[in-house]
Image (tube, rainbow, N blue to C red):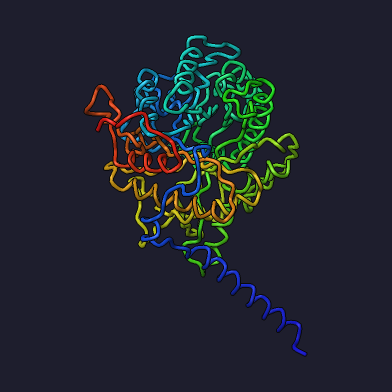
Length: 495
Ligand code: BGC
């Protein structure tokens, strides 16, 4: 009989080997380019599938006054301007005035859904106020979407996409204890006003991205680098989601499109893949897992279990009961763009502290192409995340997917490969109900200003004062998808 220590060592060895193999197999899925190129996009679906484009209010409208607009003209402590090239969103795509062109562009795609935002600071510029003119504006846009032909464009209305009214920011933003309730009362009013036109609701966009950039890495306002505060902000955002979901369900009783549902509520959750830069370095693996835990798992686990748990190794261990989160998802929205290959940094791991060295850096896989925003193009990651998040049992909506490609020539292949990933997951049983490309037009890309061009329609911000929405080759890819499921474009696009 072998000595128990020998058995233990053997088990550890076998376990480690199995873990390496498991992670090898998950990381080494590679789609065959020939198969992708010949794949019929959205094969087997019909026009009940929700196919469309997404945008956000602040990134496209121009002219909003909120916490971000107050911040964007400033500088970081090291003197760099907050926004690359000193740009601002004060005009951006001017969707506030040019929205008819946008509705036209969506019709030309043959889309049947548009995820758009309402800007909280416009509708409620001071606490408790309600701006009738701003409300009338949004109503006009929503009515035009519903009236679109050959098919109606169902709006998915997004209530918060990173920006806050200045009166909320002045009280401490998402650290103000009253913020979740203030957001929920805003949601209730929006649902009251637009519920007859809207069935699909997205309470929040990417709470994880916001908590990380605004409270962990100090890249966004209010420029905090403190894991404990980042964790508290995640909790506040999840509470805001729960309260807003309840408010929407209570205030929108109208089934706008007659399909039997007055409301479908969810949020858009960013799900990058985190893989270790070296599969054989346990520290890389540990850091990838910790990133995945904070970024990808906190939100769905909280909604599934009714308890918010935020764990950042050696820094944060938070458990907050939140039974009101249970049942708040009619769908889980996933925003997928890329994978981060993470390499652990000893200095950042040994002495974690606010503003100190980071625990990891993101490295490049030389075998993979990258976007203009230096993101790895990794469609296999979408497949992996869809399979993984399907285990929660909610219908899944790909609420964002897209690439920065100023020339516009590589985007058709990006879309093709990611829709292939989605179709493959669907064929394996993942209940995917919609796909939205980010974004309809080029727009303000947060601290990157106008460097990242994601639009199916390009805009020449510097050279064209009319900001005409210009066709890019991926419009044809989108139209091909739409045609495959029986959706019709309005007419031929002007190129
Ligand atoms: C955000 C968008 C952003 C896009 C491209 C998403 O995570 O929701 O606001 O423009 O990424 O970077």
